[in-house]
Image 1 (cartoon, rainbow, N blue to C red):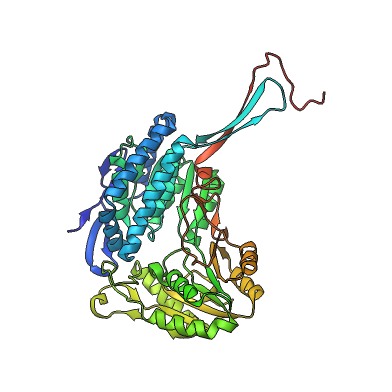
Image 2: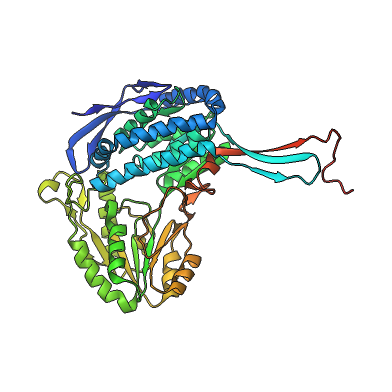
Length: 496
């Protein structure tokens, strides 16, 4: 039976003011209606921001260790409900069940990690240049944050944003992707049950144009964190720049795997299959470009093609399934159009390239694993993020050419190299222009205790996730404090 989903504003579950709704359906079987979702607009956004603003002073003044205790309780609830939430992610987003469980596990890990920051949130204490004077810096919360998340990780990515924002003492208005609103709602229910005060975390459903952009433009929103498309991210960046809001965006990738002649071929093929076709290619870290040295190219191509053709397509709830559906009809049509574009540009289609409608997949949004060869670096399928099960293969002479091809895109999120030569891998990790580099592993596998993000058009602003260079740099502002206990006026920057 379809769920009746509501917004969460000021600690209460409410319908949208105008009473309109939209549907959430299972992409593996679009006949299955999962829920009716509030189609919110600027009026609902204003109510949520008002609630967040009212809750901010008390939450800011709550000791950070106490804020951490609430996050610990949320993490424990996530653990208890992992199976239920993982199955929901599978049904609403479409990724296979093991990946859906991994999505929830990442939310668990991030919530535990950020809960621990309640007893760190470290600044600096440094020596003063003057006697009887001390100097320190502290982190402070910024205010109300708008958090806008994508559909491909419907619990993990919200946790990347919600937990650091909350532990730092900010309040939040969360606008999840319209494709995965039910998973987002269940996540917010857990944080509410863990004991967050009313108004600290608010949830507003709706479309980007009618809910997301009004949220970013709202004058009482102090900061914005966005993950999604380049087009939308760059538009929101302009809005935030003109209104002096703190801002972070993560907007995609066109990630390469380099395979050198001396690589462990079986390991490289496993990594390319996982990177290219895991999550049906719907990851910003997906390995959409395989750059293969010429000495191993033919052997790699032969084995990789066979293995990709054997991947089992179907509903992610079936434990035998390896590739689930794509998320929506819009994405489905976009991917098929890119496949036609690749053929039109002169690339050679050697596998897939079609919708998959056999058996139980007849009512779903399935596309066959697709491979192109004879791809030139400036083709659209080599430059643009397709976000589907489409992989392009390139033949290169040596490591220098491989790195040139890898870097010849406007994105710079993730890259990988397979080689047994430590010197080659050292050169690659130095010269690959990406935020993440993997050695003898796929382009997928970031861990929450280190910053996540990329270079060039992949992102803007501080990085996601943990570590000294991570999300807390977005959600806190620095204050430097000098205390003079000399009892006299000591004039700094005076030459004595």
